[in-house]
Image (cartoon, rainbow, N blue to C red; front, top):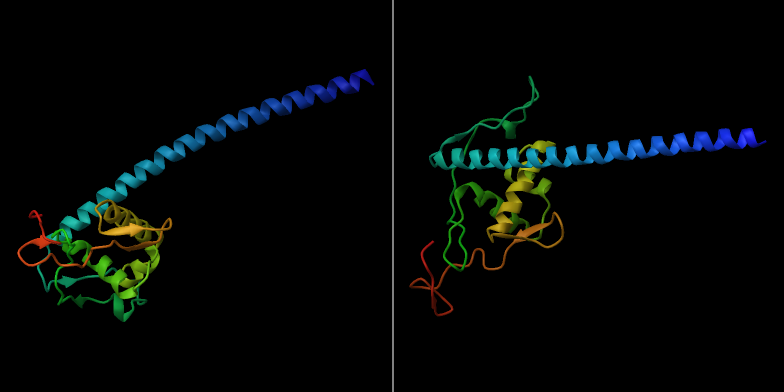
Length: 182
């Protein structure tokens, strides 16, 4: 009987050692995953910044070519579309003007009249709904929150920040206070 008990304890000890080894491997993998997710986030921000620079270089009325689906599956909406924007720039009460590359996001939120998540905003501005595009939109939305154009009430739920769309008072004054040029 003592021999059986010794075998049981020996196997339990080996199992505990294996569990500890697996936990250490999981911790190492979680650390590597966090590092890689951070790297991926930086690449997404860099790509978004590059897209903004490219969008700013486009002249008004230029042709926007949207990527189409593989061979013969292209929809009419994915075809080449002439873009003509007929709207005033989006401003805040402090006089700052939102860059053209981000106007479509704020206008989509204004049209919805309620907070939205990244995927419906992608749909509203005509982006593909694949995971990569939705994540790029989420990065863009988070940046607009930091800049004061949007707010994120609930995690992942974005709305227009108070004061966005409010023009400054005549003479560059808001509520009687002079507004510095942006």
